[in-house]
Structures are given as structure tokens and as C-alpha cells.
Length: 168
Image (cartoon, rainbow, N blue to C red):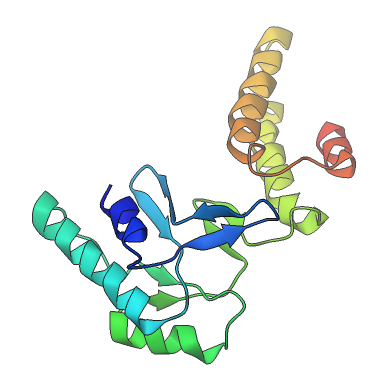
């Protein structure tokens, strides 16, 4: 709520996505938050102040040493300047966030190769064990359900990647 209010007050602008002009200020998943802002020092300081206020109000501690600044469409040196002042990490896109390639081109086979490798690794386990036909079907169903439910809401699975998964 604090981030939404700060965005409404113009303390930081967020990002405008796509042709429809969708405005996104932040995304949250479990205990992680991604905050979008302009590459302006004033906005970054305002976000840092909000995070400090959150710490005081909630008695929770934000680990700034695990926090990351990632610049998109800006000078490569600017994120390094911000991270040195904010005491956090600097990364370039694409990088992994919760095991997913954030900022990678989802149309490239290389981006989804991670999904293929994880499926093959999980399914390789049943080859070593003596499982009944039903047991193998259940294992395959479990692997596909869990991994594809995690990855595919973000990426559309290209046909060539689906064929590679289906290969024996």
C-alpha cells in the first residue's frame, strides 16, 4: 500500500508497458518485490526512504546486500553509481530471478533450455528405479504439472521446445 501511495504522490513513476500504456510501479511474489522507477537519483532515494520506513513500521529487516539494481535502456555506468550509494548489487539483463530468466527473449530456444534440462533431470530419476507403469505415469505427470505450472505462465512454450521435451 505504501508503494502505491508513493506512486500516486509522484515520489516515483514506475514503468509504462506496451502500446496500451499499462503502468506498473511494482510486482510482488512471496517475500520479493520488484520496483520499477526512472533512472533518476531523486526517485531512487525516495524508494530507499520508503523501504526504511517499512523496516521501522514492520520490524522486518530488508537485506540491501541481496537487493539488485538493474538498468534498462540507460548508460551502463549509471546503475553502478546507484549501487555504490545504496550498498546493493548491480546486474545486467538477462539474469535469473527465482530460477526464471528475467529479461531474456522467450522466443529463443536458449531461454527455455532451462525448463527442458530440469524436466529431463527430474525424469532421469525414474529410469534408475524400478517403477511400475502407473508409478512412471504419476512421476511424469507430477514433473510436468509442477515445472510447467511454474514456468509457462510467464513463457509461451514454442513447438520446437515441446517436441524436445516429448523426445524419449
